[in-house]
Length: 242
Image (cartoon, rainbow, N blue to C red; front, side):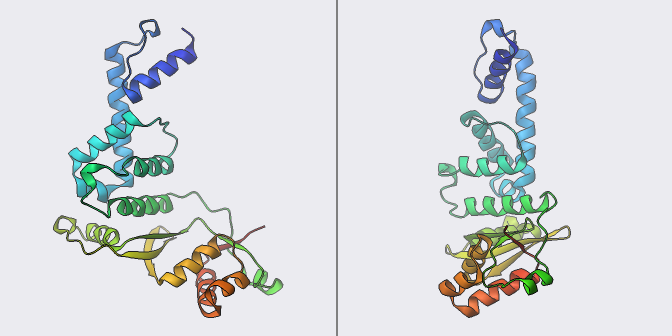
């Protein structure tokens, strides 16, 4: 059997628990060693990304859904950013979590925070005052830098996350579902969560997606557009699109 075929057999056996063909030369005892290692790596990686979700669900349940994720998803371990996103999708409609309407939003929040904490250095420099002076800001198109994200989630998710930071997550109580709007930013080595007014959030979202100031004014009015652009410029959240 060619090396590529052996590698394919190995991957199927380790990730999906399929039995290798006899001529692959892969023994059950050898595969078990590697399988246990792969499982431990994924559990550890996902525990780093989702510590609050893990604490909320408990170690045993968390480990079980990680195992289920590995068995039922064609997956290659490429980056923590990818594994976090894929894991959230894989837990969607998990019957055991149906009573917790906010759990996917909690996972989205944790994944967003983790990605900002460990983001690569941003090559997009912030907009300078000279650039704004030289060009008409009305027609400039922007994008957000890697130190900031916008996210709309249920307020219970942020309450749980906050409780975990204060080590009070075990005394959890939840309220009626309520969508809230947040700007999450990394300043130096710290990540902060800032709640926004819905109109400011929507205008900022369009600003990050490349809408110019003139277009923002048409959609949201001059006051909301001005507040959104001013906030983003003051916090160095924007780069100019080429």
